[in-house]
Image 1 (tube, rainbow, N blue to C red):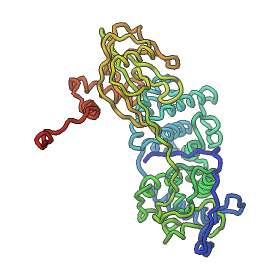
Image 2: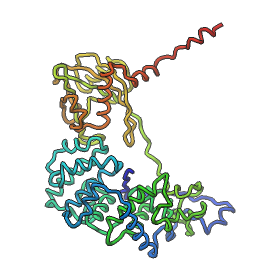
Image 3: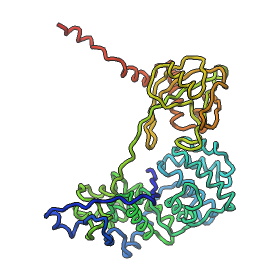
Length: 476
């Protein structure tokens, strides 16, 4: 499962328009909540855990976690309180939590092991270069995360005598790129501070147990999740408890196929107890935490209320693989220090419309990179790579140059380097997954002598369809 963090604390509260009720709906007022954004009435206690439930929740979840938790490398380090110093535990949790943001656990494990083997302490990471950090992070996505880890390690070593703060408040204040969730995770797991935390898994568990169906992007709703998380966290085992809730959301209380029969706290789940749609609403009027009106019955899957996804934009770029004629090295340009894929290397790329005109490609190479090529650019095909908010199409071209000095970097890019083919593919350079896919496609096309299936499909799609031979025989 991907770890989705929720660190919104400045989003303006959305308005909910009052709904006019007919006679039939008005008679059910004791069950449903009237939505009125101007009301100051307190929300029903249905949406919050009662004191009588909290001890049961703690014990049930911790017992379940002790028996069912997954063995993960960062847990092994953070759980050894007797033989591991505070900074090592804090660093281990910090690295894991940053890597787990928007990334699946299965993907993170190997990256984490390699990272800790290379930089076992903050002091080791602080001595690394940004290029080394980007290289180690390459392929994990959301590359600013690696840079912020490195910046944070340098800050702790240089400004705080190498000592991580022990409280969520100080961690959030000091560490770059660390918000309320990550700070609470480090403080509770590594330093046993009794604070709850809220991520995507925790939201799913709490929203179902407390039937919270309001818009999750509204501050009022987010505050309710944090209030619930802080109220139920174990004061003696806060780290284990927080991980237990996240583990429950990742393995049992899943988004589409929850295993309710295996849930250790099912008897306390309000959504599971509901018999029909009316049971989704509390008895309080003007409640801001209930579901909106006219929601279809779908059991526990109604919760949490889905947030509208960010619109995915589509872009097309030309990538040109420029190879030096003498030593066959390939030109790589380092991207700007900020923005998408910051600090990573790529082949010369330019955003432009699709074209199969080699003269146009040559012209654009000269305009963007002052490149003087010695052979007409050759087309190899295209690939699609999906980022979180962009569907990127790469049109792959290649050409040769005899003079490396005839290539200039764009203004905001950092530097130009020339590398052999093997180093681009073996993972020893800070190159994005997308660029590795582009280069691998190019290599495969050369091996296939230009007979690449993807390239053929594109050409066929653009060729006017010929009539079948049967049509000639059927003509009168």
